Image 1 (cartoon, rainbow, N blue to C red):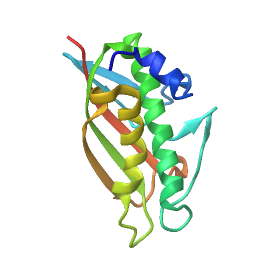
Image 2 (cartoon, rainbow, N blue to C red):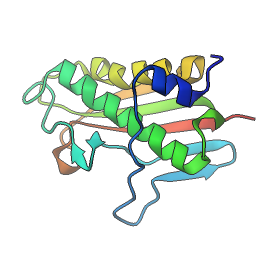
Image 3 (cartoon, rainbow, N blue to C red):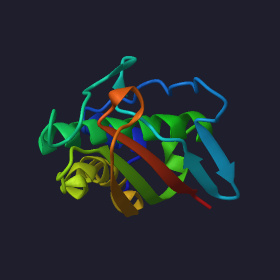
Length: 155
């Protein structure tokens, strides 16, 4: 991708939120060598969850995908705050997508596509990644999705 990441965000009409501060004894981002690891990011926009509840009971897949997309934007915001520029991303190595799921809900992988599709749209090939999509009984604040990421910095 020849465009800078900020140019690509603008072309997609996307605005990164401010990186959320940690509210407990953890770091929102930690680095180890050329890896940047984010803490789990909830689907917060303007300080509020974009949705709450369980997938398959309170929310459908499309709503879950939008929540996952917001989590991915929050991941990018954290990485930008840590690195100073999203152009310093070498690759998204892996994301883990936790989906608060009602019993019998088995479409966590489809919910996770909301994040995966956004990362590839913004970062091109650097956004392609390994991924796990995991159903869980509940998430903090009754969030429907939480995502953590491992990012490799550019050399």
